[in-house]
Image (spheres, rainbow, N blue to C red):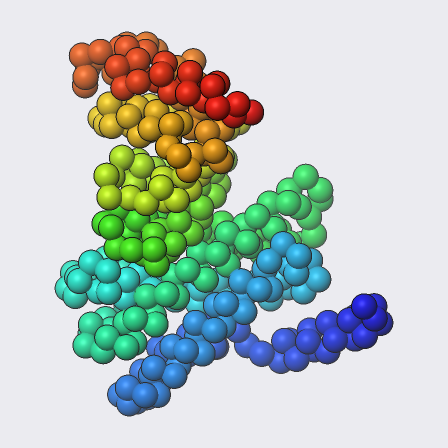
Length: 341
């Protein structure tokens, strides 16, 4: 390809992008609703806002983030706009997948929630806005974390601080708990895909909160781990969702200074169900890429926790519990099938 032409195109795109206020586009539905009740206008504003979310996903992709210097335009207003779209996506998802139209968990204005509940077309499109929001935040967090080993500039440091505040807010945690629950209701592949994206982001949120536990020890972010556990043991969850959860948990607890605490909460009061699910992941026909995290979590549980940890809730030691749910046979299955782990 023509390198000079590509560079010129990138420069031109950057020039045009700098003229666009992403925060205004992300918050367009709320602005439009403040001046008109026209459903077509409001629907179009949601289209613009959702497409803006997908634009942010593109801009924050690993291959594009450095090129477009995302830390330069990650203002508080843009982050707030992403959180707002995440919240509206949650409310619409609850209406679409769970058929809940009252007592919704997020803090949208009453007229916005009423509109979503009354117009199925808008609810359908807005329910999908959670997906790009989760992916955008995940991309942003991964990109900014990649600079932690070097001395980050002022813009990068400010962007990282703003993103951390947005990710660890109570509102974001509440949204992710709801989205993760979509993977447990048998709502189909679309609901499961949204839940998978929320699961990946939840792992990042919990990891960041662990690094700064002193400031976030009473935060709602810790409600994400029980949500992940419920998704892991839910019988109606798709395998892909279970796989995403075990990878999320494994990535979170490795080299985590709160490892023992997190493992205790993981096994919690559902020790037998967790043991059964983790063991089942080792023998599922589709499990080749889920063996590593599942084995890692089981190994860490058995090595780290006291063998008597589960006696109070199950009357059995952790080791016996895993043996009774078939761990030994599952390990033989893994070995016999030449799985690298």
